[in-house]
Length: 202
Length: 151
Image 1 (cartoon, rainbow over the protein chains, first blue to last red):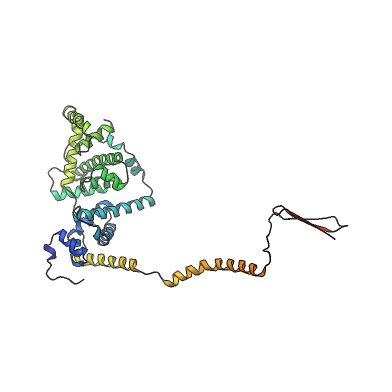
Image 2: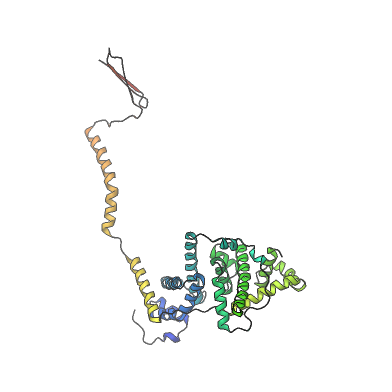
């Protein structure tokens, strides 16, 4: 595909770049990759908690998006469409890993639920007075300590803005399970953030 | 507090509660300290998380990352474009044709020779008579045939 010298890729909005890419303009697609690669990688890393896997899955997501570009008609933003592709790839990978790996007792207890009711309600803000970079770092660290099941529900709800039913359909669980996992994830996260604050103070 | 109540408070916070229960939970939040405490804690955590999404950046350079993506796209396109190996297809066909052809040849042979195709009965039994008179009996239950050969 000959490159058009008149096209200003960096200054062009996603919609136009997608249109050019759909016509076979690989430079337009490359610009989209450059523009969104960090976000796609970040989403994969938050789900998988492994850098190598996250890079691999993010690249696979770009390959899939190239193959399916003709199916994108602008119903959502390109970034949203891309994050959904990478999330689905991550979910598939997590399911494959779950089949191969025996669940730890802790994970089974967390999935079964009930533990969250015993956690004390923490009303003080554990991130108060901290710089944003530090807050983000602590949240990231705390999310690492959640199980994949709880982390996925939290991520889809808080960062992807999906509703309970959308999450249930995406993961293949009931709405009730979404609600209980989200509740547990939030309570556990709050507890972990308070714990991290106490560790830093000590 | 029961888990069902906790989940209702959470659903109320997330705007996912049935309209019929909204007013009741809103009232409970105002009147019950325990409900209020849980609602505030969930709300605080939700806001903190949403406003502080962790950021991660790729360490690979733009060119390197793009070259990896290009390589994978090219590999997929090669895989999808690969034609069926004619030698492979032919060998599979031969493997199926040989036994079928063999059976057909045997059947044709019997037809042309006008000989009855021998039937082997699995229930055929053989018995022999006492030594003074030698005889051989052949009986087939399936065919309903009994043959006595006396010497």
